[in-house]
Length: 61
Image 1: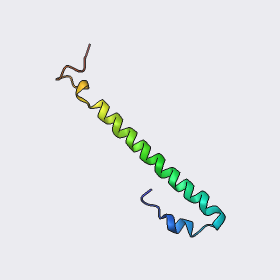
Image 2: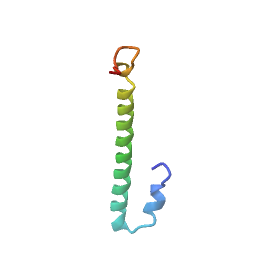
Image 3: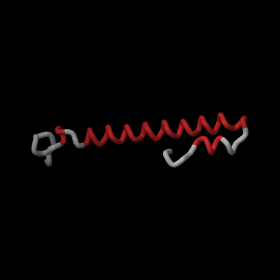
Image 4: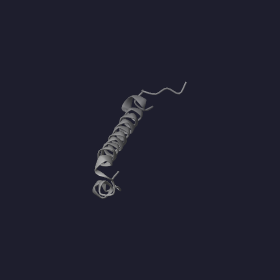
């Protein structure tokens, strides 16, 4: 999303299409942000102390 310039994009569409383009731009940004947050949360959960073998969290058997 950081590679896209919304002002240039909106300047290339008609006034009637600008709302749709802007809504899609925001929707894409929100989806990207949510997926990044979920990945960070999952990585933090996978690498939390309860999963470390040395702390007694994980089991091999």
